Length: 158
Image (cartoon, rainbow, N blue to C red; front, side):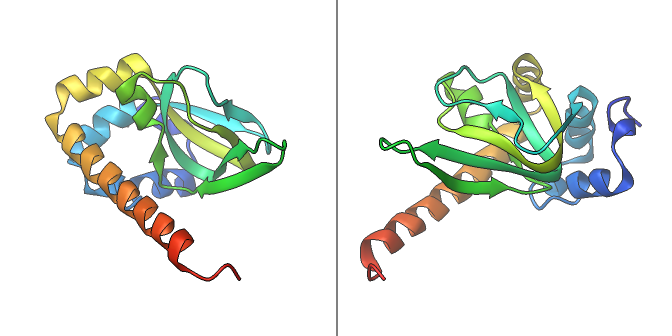
């Protein structure tokens, strides 16, 4: 067992290990990710990332949720999505070395597994499988986004 994974509750560990994306990875890759991950526990509302800031880590949600949001020109905050247990995020900004695109805050008491950027890069170098898995994940995200854009442009306003 990994030092960092010991601090997860059984429920948190199960949420990570049974996540629809993570559970499909090979055992060696899952082990390597978990061995490099640091457990972070956050109170409700704690800021994880701010739009425009450099990306520093790749994150898996073990408990609670992360609210991804943006602020409109009029100053109104809009929630784009909630990242739920078993889901990993933050990889896009690590791939393209561009700043974070949105704000991210803990929604409720939240437990995260955080993989720092150098460790993420080392995982990619050691496991070609991770590139393929993240490619499939991001293609799925892109398809969902296209579906949402199509809905916004074709559904009645009501």
